[in-house]
Amino acid sequence: AQTVTQSQPEMSVQEAETVTLSCTYDTSESNYYLFWYKQPPSRQMILVIRQEAYKQQNATENRFSVNFQKAAKSFSLKISDSQLGDTAMYFCAFCPGNQFYFGTGTSLTVIP
Amino acid sequence: EPEVTQTPSHQVTQMGQEVILRCVPISNHLYFYWYRQILGQKVEFLVSFYNNEISEKSEIFDDQFSVERPDGSNFTLKIRSTKLEDSAMYFCASSGPNHNYEQYFGPGTRLTVT
Image 1 (cartoon, rainbow over the protein chains, first blue to last red):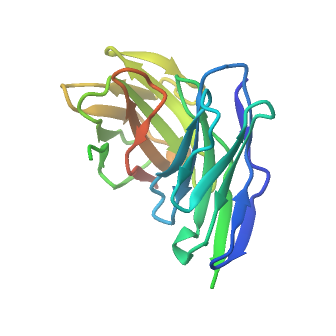
Image 2: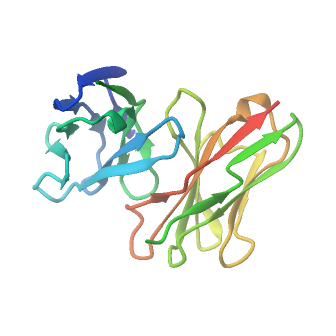
Image 3: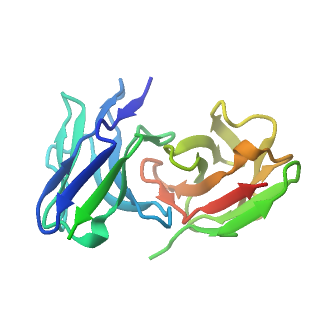
């Protein structure tokens, strides 16, 4: 069975500080993609960053970076220099090719 | 940049009515999906569609649901007789043409059943 676990339902961070959101997953697949999505109050799903499982190098997208540990099946998201606009729900997702499996989300609040 | 579009953005319907949610996937994509997110919960897979047929569906996708690609551009989700518990955000996604790992999500349709 494919599962995605986000163990932090809520987190907060001071503006300009760094925060890390955790995600673990379980799969027997060897090739897959991992994603972090941001969902603001509008509920639109906005892609933040993606990682291909066969790539060793951690993905980076401006202030967002991941720590991908394939053996540990861990995929955490680091947000540097947090901004008020980063306040949102963040979903970790895993895709082995047929469908997406989402975690339950982490609600992040950036405090001014 | 090409994007997935969905209409309407918000649909209100009465229990027992039929609704059709519409999606226009990215034009050269071959794989299409519907997902559902009940308020406060995670996004859940409903169905995937490829080569004019359902390739996979979840337990949620029962006989009340159907999907169709009526022409070369639209991809629809029909709920025959809506229930209160169908109230949710419905996301369409598409991927391809070479692989289906990277799914692009539409902005969603908020369905409210009263």
